[in-house]
Length: 334
Image 1 (spheres, rainbow, N blue to C red):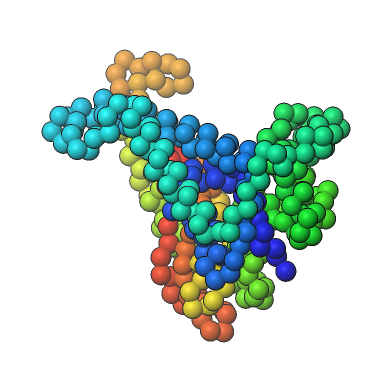
Image 2 (image 1 turned 45 degrees about the vertical axis):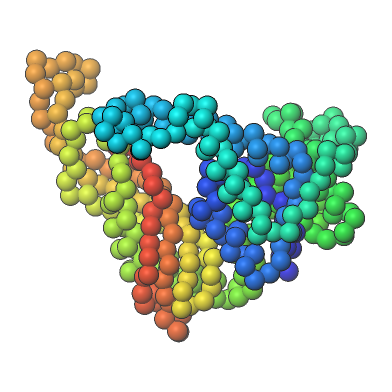
C-alpha cells in the first residue's frame, strides 16, 4: 500500500512554477479529496519556498514593467491593464497572491511542521563528510536538503511509518534508495498513479490509448496548433505540415474509471513541413537583394499534454474524447 505521509520537494513546486492551478498541482489536490494525507514540512524547506516565491514575484513584476514600456499605447489608453504601480509594489502584490495560493494548497493536507531545532546537525555533517545522499562529490553543498532529510528521518523513526518523497531531484532518489522506509516518486503524476488500486484497469487503459487511432489523430491536430519559432525569419510561412510517428514517452493515468479517464502524457513526433521565407544571406554569402526561398524541413519534437476520454465497457477502444490540450510551448524549427 502506498503511504499517505509525504514530503514535497521544492523542485516539484518550482517545476510547475508555483502555479497551484496547474495539472501537476491538481493531481496532488485530487488525491486528498477522499482520504487524509499528511504533508511533512521542515521549516528550512518552508523558508526556501518563501524565498523562491519572492524571487518569482520579482521576475513577474519585471516582465510586467517591461510589457508596459513595450505596449505604451495600451498604457496610455487602457491604463487599468497596468494598474500595478512600480516594480517593488507589483512584486509585493504578486508575492502575496502566490503565497495565498500556497496557503490554500496546504489546507488540502494535515501539515506537520519541523522547526530548526529538529535538525540533526551531526547526522548532516556525517553525510557531508562521507558524500552520502543528498550530498555527492558533484553536489557537496546540499545542506538545505540534508537538514530537511534529518527532520524526516527523525519523524519516520518516531512514527515507524513509511514516507513518500516527491521530487524531481535525483539526490532525493539516492537518499530513498538507501533507506527502506522512504519511497521516491519523480512527479506528482507518478505518486497519484501509484495510489490507484485498480492496476488491471491502468494497464488496459495504457494499452488502449497508446494505440487508439482517435487519440493519435487528436494529438496530431493539437501539435499542429503549437506555436513554432521559425528560425528562418519573421516572415516564414508554413505549408503542408504533416505529423508522423507519434510515440508515447510517458503516460500517467490519474483516474482509472473507463467512463472518464484522465491522462497526462509526453509524446514524441516527427514533423515535416514546407516553408516559404525571404532571406538576404545564403550560406554566409550576402545577396544583392532579398530573395524568396521555399524548402521542405523535418524535425523531431517532444510535447506534453493531457486528455480526458471514455473507454468502451469492454476496454478495447476509446469511444469518446471529452477534452484534450497540449502545454503551451514554443518549439524551434528547423
